[in-house]
Image (tube, rainbow, N blue to C red; front, side, top):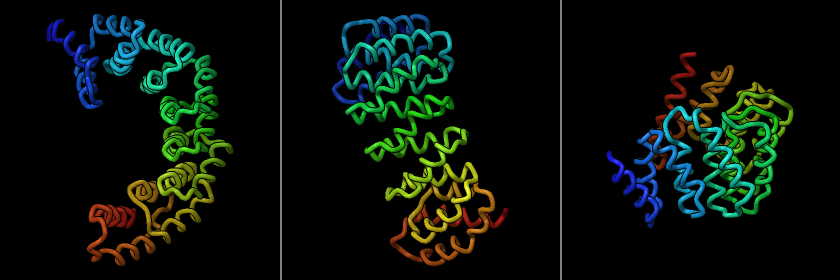
Length: 270
């Protein structure tokens, strides 16, 4: 693809009326991992035009597999935006960009990120959660623990996932919030928290798993917990009873029933 075609993609992204059309252009632009593309993206990020900044960030943040050569400079630009901009969309996009490159985050960055945990914007807090996934440092964990108590269900769910599954760090504070969320009324949050406790061999997991089995309202995430927990085969009688109860029920999701059957098969082979 020549320079004029790349320019056209940038123009189409700028003029895009729908998210789907916008991202189609961005995905195409990310295929051109060249010094010229990197330079162009930084030029857009440095511009005074809001939409141009967004395009530059969206392309550059996932340009190629190895971004070591420009990640530090990109993060410096993004953290300048955090200090100077109040635009919700730009900040959210920038936080997602951080998440895609968070292995390059420095300790000095966490004090800036921390301020977003009390943002009035759900989108910003959600993007903040993503930005911290997989980071084992205490500062990141502290923010995620706060987000795991957020009023937004989707933020609480993702932060619980981040603490429970994306890191192996095992502290009392992490276990406390996971246990608290294991009692949530929301199925997804509750089962994410149970999985996190199971990953840490928490002694309270057995009671929590039995409670879920009695509710008979679980899915892929819970199956994964049963298949990976120590001595998961002890729950076979309960799972088999549930399968026998629903195997001929025409109203039951067939995929769920198939997953349940597979779970039984795997545990029987342990």
